Amino acid sequence: MSEALLLLVIQKLDINYREDEKNENMERVIKEMKEIFDIVRDKKLEEGRTLNFLVSDLVQMADDALHNYNINIRSFGSIHSWIGEIKKQMLKLGDDEFNIISISENVDDDKYVVGLDEDLEMLLHKRIIDEEEYLSTVLIKGMCGIGKTTLAREIYNHPTVVKRFERRAWVSNSTHFTLKKLLIKLIQQVEDPQNLHTSSLLEEMDNRRLRYMLCQHLQGKRYLIVLDDVPKQMHLMSFLEALPQEWNGSRLLLTSHTTHIDIDVEDEDVHQMKPLDSKKSWQLFLKTINHGNKIDG
Image 1 (cartoon, rainbow, N blue to C red):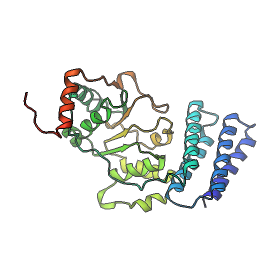
Image 2: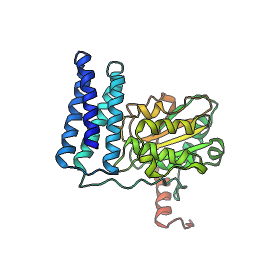
Image 3: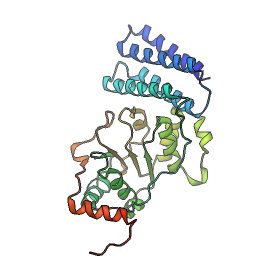
Image 4: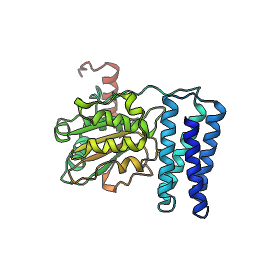
């Protein structure tokens, strides 16, 4: 099934390549796709969740390539980058299998929070619950371990945020991450509790259908979506296009140590995290080693 689908995609790309005077960008994509097809064939990979997720992303990349190859060079570079990442994951199949999808994300309040009051106040009132009605993107940026996820979690669970946004969803990066996995996790968090889809049913859908479903669940709702440390290679253009662009104050919040190629963020919407001073670092250390017990003096 996967081999047949990949072959069909390659043939479709080949036809377009010949009809459009052999576009160089399309040639690169076709070459990568053929190498991935050889990997699937030679390794004799069994059909399953892992292959389903990766092939679904490849089909989406091919579709995006057909629509962007002569329009947006930046987008095409992002497509090619994600195809390369998928190829790396294909090579690992059989040795390092995908984990089963879980709809739960660790978004509970952090037990150990020190020195983030100013950051929280600044982001919450000036970026998340401000007067801007258009869908805006906010980036929490900083080196690894500096507290980006903790700050995002404090915002996500803040009572004002919980009350303001009708739909909230949080997705964190994992060892094996795909666009399909991202879409499924989001849908499972924003869909109506009375009409929940099972993981197996969602996995049977392609990315196009999942994007449409996500858009339908968010339509007419003020939403907050948090993408916590998503891979910088991930092609997010199609995901972003699935988000309703309504003027209702919805927000997209990202954490990263760098700026994602597909995300346009205004300078004023980038929050640069700074290291804790020695006093606050010591307070955090004491809280951590004492498991939250009160320390006098």
